[in-house]
Length: 237
Ligand SMILES: Cc1cc2nc3c(=O)[nH]c(=O)nc-3n(C[C@H](O)[C@H](O)[C@H](O)COP(=O)(O)OP(=O)(O)OC[C@H]3O[C@@H](n4cnc5c(N)ncnc54)[C@H](O)[C@@H]3O)c2cc1C
Image (cartoon, rainbow, N blue to C red; front, side, top):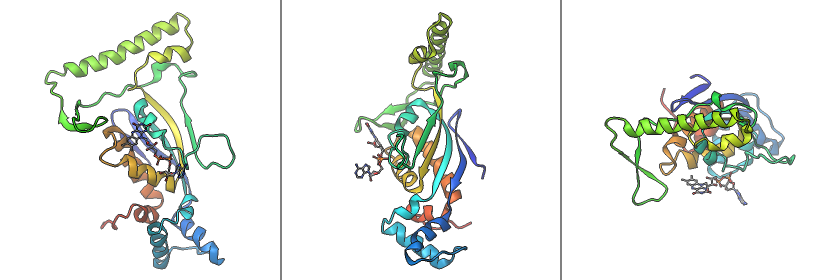
């Protein structure tokens, strides 16, 4: 599998870097006994399972993974709510990092707009959810209006900047479907929490697609720890 996974129309999640492996989890736990191993054994996998089942989180926090993500702004707003183990304060004790593209620096002509394949119906039993049922749009009129609105917003943005308005103010006319990019570095514990919440059926469809990509890339880095943290059975190749 590639280290970069395309998501939606212009988005992606790319694995940039990682600190640690399944062995890191094992050795972080075994230091209690003054022990360190160089290769992973079946017994070590048993230890990982024990740690995961009993919520001994600290050994998993030694594993950190850095992703480059390109997501619609409304997805970034949901992602950004995950703050523990993904810190963005300037205090020295935090173990997380989030750095994002800035429309104060770059011109918005370089950004993309997310256009869904179709429109989902509003759920009647859950105020924040949609259903699997599509809104009928046989001629694509709703889709065309959606795309036209994005273009008009960009045209207004350009008009404002051409008239001398600062980028930092002009950007405010852009809709929530603009793509943004950020680097996200998180501990394995924080990633697991993110996956639990954002791969869940109650999470919005779009962020679930990104969670699936984070999931697949994380499994590449720490296949055993991640499998036990999510209580998944071993896949048969
Ligand atoms: C389906 C869905 C709908 C949502 N709707 C909304 C919404 O309408 N509005 C909105 O504002 N947000 C909403 N959220 C965001 C949600 O409230 C959380 O902020 C977000 O999911 C981050 O999760 P978290 O709090 O576990 O993450 P983090 O804040 O990163 O916390 C991670 C974990 O650390 C632990 N932790 C954190 N803080 C403390 C503490 N002070 N003391 C002890 N332990 C702590 C907890 O175990 C927590 O799960 C929604 C989330 C989902 C999944």
